[in-house]
Image (tube, rainbow, N blue to C red):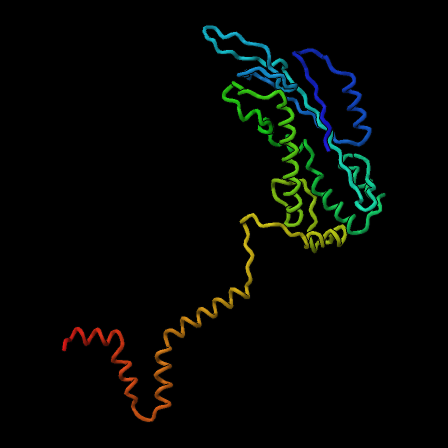
Length: 290
């Protein structure tokens, strides 16, 4: 769960909302994870005006000798604050922890009536979300984390909606969910470079408890095309049967002649006719003529 706080710094003034500061202090007292993102307008000009709280641009810029209109951002810097909180619940009794930061929520879950398997599952998921807050989604990407930056050419910003900040945050949240799913897989198969901070439990290396190791061994995910499952026994049987048929095709004539000769005490004229009526023999006779 994420709570959003927006603060606009207009020019070089220090007009900061006192209520906003008190809200941040309240969030800190509730053990939340807070991230502040400073979004600078720099020299970007907007093609059309908008009243988005972050990307607001309504000040028209005069362009000499042209009817084209450009708009300057109203704010030098906009600050978007995100408060991440997590909650663990026991489904049968519907008892839940408070909304807490990631470092506190697992400790609080110990007070819930969870069995050993539920405790292991909660810790397994907690390992995946430990480095999955909004900060870790935005910070590594920098300006590329903004979808609005994809429509900037040189210093001209294409039109953005009045709710662009909602689009941006929804994108960050969607990315965090995708990263959470990937982290769950990486915990079982081993660490990758792109997730250096995820806490892994490797089976067979004295994990914190055996249940976590069992969860790793029992995890099943759909293949994305990089891996293929096949039966070694099935492939071996197919290879053996096909090889036998091919080999039999080379020796079946010889075997038939041998068997027919064993059961016939004299020269069998049918074998002679078989040899003479063979495709190659017929072609030779035709070539020699009558």
